[in-house]
Image (cartoon, rainbow, N blue to C red; front, side, top):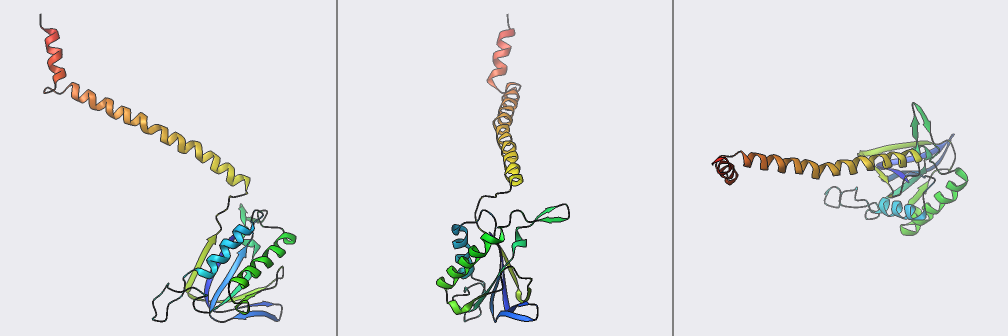
Length: 207
């Protein structure tokens, strides 16, 4: 799951001419759910959103308090475009969770967030609608967050597999280069007039 978290002084969601929801100071959270996301990913994101220390404390010290510490609001908006992969200049969204699965999954994220915080302070947009999201970014402060899951894109997996042999090949060069260095060092020692090896050679030449 990919998430964009913005610290805001105000934010609102409008569909057509109707304002769906709005918040004062707090966080606007854009959530992009992938086909591989599980409740483990959702729990991670909920925990991070609620506990990130993006606000100042009572004495004005920055990066000290979370949205829960300050009793601020959270506005969540589902945004599948965060799962975009570019094919040239054309966006591809095949990694995004299909709408029929994403809607109940998104609803469960909201439910978990409300259970972990104060329900009346967690608001959202309208799933699947063409929304206008109005954000007054405070700072500006924008945090990009990705849940620690394995990529599902076969192209990404293939890329990782190709990188692995190169890394192993790079590691195999270490001993070889080290051996060359040792060999060169021994060679320099053998030609050193003060070394014992030179004396041995001289004794062999004597009749």
